[in-house]
Amino acid sequence: MAWVEAGTIENIPAGRVALVHHEADDVRIAVCNVDGQFYAIEDVCTHDGGPLGQGELEGDEIECPRHGARFCVRDGRATLMPAVMPVRTFPIKIDGQRVLVGTESE
Ligand code: FES
Image (cartoon, rainbow, N blue to C red; front, side, top):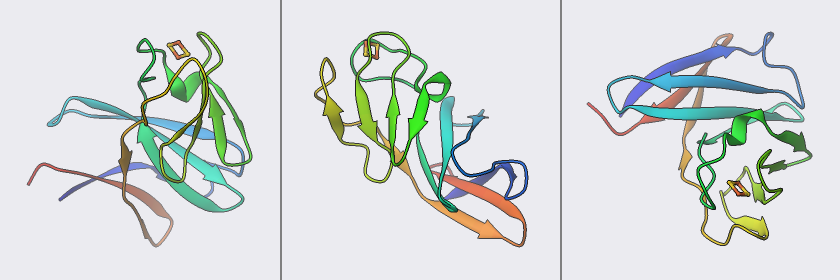
């Protein structure tokens, strides 16, 4: 597991989303702060590739800015059409003030 820094606890306040690009895996990740708990999903909607991290985060659901599909950021499942497939999720680790996202590379 390789860990990349998405930001600090302070600069990703509750209700906000931080975007990080993991270059080794070439994956864009949206890190979401839900009432102080951090969750990470791929920044790519499973409906048609929309930039999920630019969508509105409401509670633990994020809305795709392209056609309005919603996903639970805790487990990635699609909760509203037109998306039906879940979005990929990633583990989060807090190291002091740093918010780290885990990806598959070594
Ligand atoms: S691309 Fe996200 S709802 Fe269509």
